[in-house]
Image (cartoon, rainbow, N blue to C red):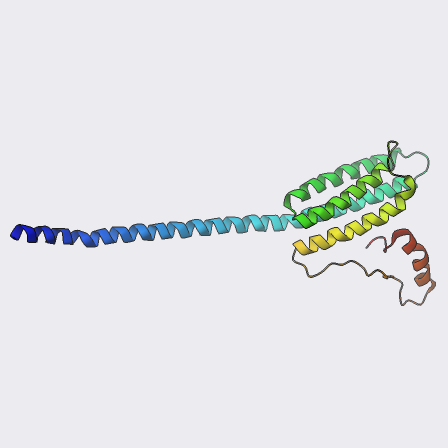
Amino acid sequence: MVMLDGAMAESSSYIPAIFGLAGSLIGGFIAGTVSLLVARQARAAAEGTWIRDNRREIYDRLLTRAERLLHACEAYQETHGDKEAVKATLESAYTNFFEAYGVLQTVAGIPLVDATRDHAYRLRALAESLSSTRVMDPQKFNLVVRLIRDARHEVLDAMRAELGLDRGIRPAADYNPWAGTKTELEEEYVQAERSRFGLWPFL
């Protein structure tokens, strides 16, 4: 009886230790899990911040190079005689734009990638219409310029959506920068610029 009581007393002394060990293990598991989740969330936040910060630079680069390519195409098309100087500018602008286009596809969401693809293909068609191996009718040059500017507004709308801005900046269909000036420019714009570009050419 004395031996039994001693064994029970000895075993009962281990019970707090067992519960203490179990509590430590559970606490360590919880602390480790929380630390892992916090670290994962911090990494995801850092990656999101990097992408968000770099998107702005990439978007700026793409838009700038797209405009340079468009202007280079227009300069080449309007140049008569020796076109070697403007040809070099056109080729450089073409390469630079498609480099930026490739980078954008790695960080942009699907709606922006889709909008930019239309913009890029129209720019490529315009540039190729100036080459000796062109497929598109050169007479469609001004039409393609207008469609490129339409595509640019689609790209801008998609960029603003990705950056969390409130709305697009596409001009109204009847936009006229000379409206309300009560000058001949108001009517001339309607008759000339709108028939050529569809929208004010630089906005």
